Length: 281
Ligand code: GLU
Image (cartoon, rainbow, N blue to C red; front, side, top):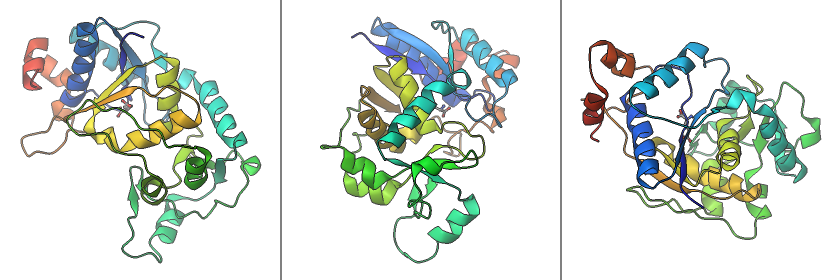
């Protein structure tokens, strides 16, 4: 089967040290395994992604000394594949259209069930307002949600996955998925594009990724991805969630922390080796 991994940034800002660590780790691991390293541009959020940031991704990674296969998959070029996956899940009876705004969800979610866990990996757990709506009623101003209880019940056994990072794999259980994750969005209402959970799963399969290497911040999304892989009959890769690079105050770096941008270190005369040292490689 070989070893195939990827680095999948969203070009919504400059790459920072955290991205450098993730990309270098995936790249080095692939090279050490005699495997393949791919780059994927996750630009479905058309409102926030720019071609300038995308160009900078290529430039920074090349400067770091990484090489990757071409052509590079850009998610904005692959929307048909996500729509096909949606249609398939819709025809299985597992999706419904949703017209709720964030405000609607906040109001409905904060109403009765005090003490219940309200937060899922995507924010508030969806209170189910539109769950009665048939999939066929979807209009182009609707989001699309997965009916989590139906999705779980569709499978005879819940799949599990292998984790090689420092924290053990999260177990997929009905209780966790239905009560603590809930009906996640698979296609967004605002941009009318596939949501991250769907596009990442479709593309990891399309690119035959055997090992997903990414930050610990995405570990709680992995049960969602593994569930979608099982529903869509896709292979389940091995996951490795790595430590996050933090600033001096222990805060995780985010793209808005432009002070940590690789481009800035480059301007100040740092070498790729300096960056490797800074992230502990
Ligand atoms: N595009 C995601 C990000 O930039 C990463 C997705 C992944 O590695 O699965 O955070």
